[in-house]
Image 1: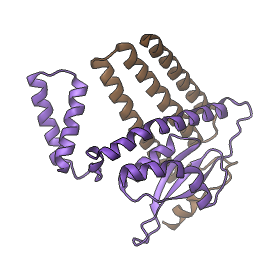
Image 2: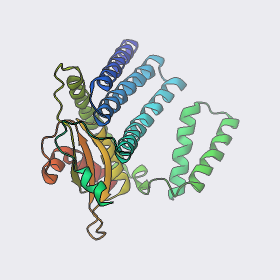
Image 3: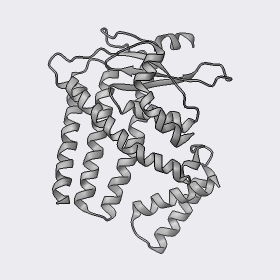
Length: 110
Length: 169
């Protein structure tokens, strides 16, 4: 039973990873692409790891999978902040149809 | 105290990662945890009390399912926008204000915002006035509903602040 739930979680996880990649290709600029890649890939990978933990049962592999999931949850959004800030600092413009850019005022002040 | 908490935490993670109680492994773990805790405790988060306070840990446990609910919602939202043929996005960067004061609290808020519906933290800043100690976050929003600071803060940050205030402050 836990095996089946584990495999279902792994499948959902891979599905989210695929959707994240589709978003990565379709969205127009760096920031929107980061949105797709960070959210979908984080959740997809976490579901995948939880699925692996369920399938392998309690043991070294399960514990490692859960710890990896926690670390991905902490590090992945942090990396996204760094990339977004770096992209803005090096002058990557927002998509031409963007409606508002409050960050421009802040960077002008510096 | 602080060093001791981080020492125990590092050692527990080491044991979970290696998953064997063997003299060699335990001694190596003790040495590595001691180095981490005693040399690098200054760059580790200042809010170490969260690990020993039962109330804070309880709220952290309550926060996890709430957070996963929003994360699931966020993902379905992004998947919808990515797969829709017309791609219904209206992106922009807005500024929001947070009531949180501690470094860990603000970090947790920024990470939660990044992983939840249509928002991505780009940068954070204080208003240059040390007395008020207000922190502002710049958020890239995939579907801008309001560019007003108060309104956007309410829509983006409020649902997490209540929990994070209980956990970190």
